[in-house]
Image 1 (tube, rainbow, N blue to C red):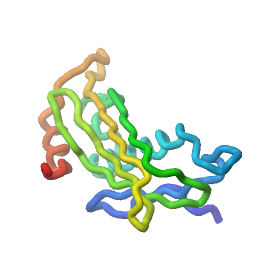
Image 2: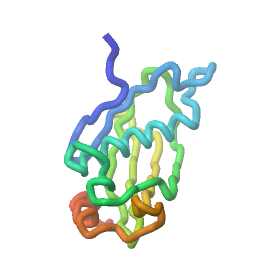
Image 3: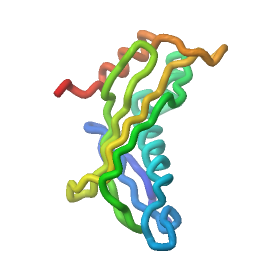
Length: 149
């Protein structure tokens, strides 16, 4: 039986548990840098589906596309085959047309692995040009917004 490599561990806070596969690693057994993007996108996909009520794409449920405008990574630790990380996701900021989803990955013992930001921008579906965040989507994002420090 194949065990899941990625699944939702908790809804509140929203946490995705990911297990590193051997194929994610270079011949020395260290995770390829590019795989961290896969880990981020997997967690963001599960998180936005959760925000959308578990079905469909978050933006499309509100009449917009939400392609990636920017991604930022801080790599803090390395990963090896069979390592487990927990990726905590939250809405960090909401602007006029875009918003930020922050994802912090830690080992189950709390040791940090990476801190990343994924920033979608709202675009019209008919013309693929930027558009303000619809009020209905903004209301959803506000429900998941992290409290200010």
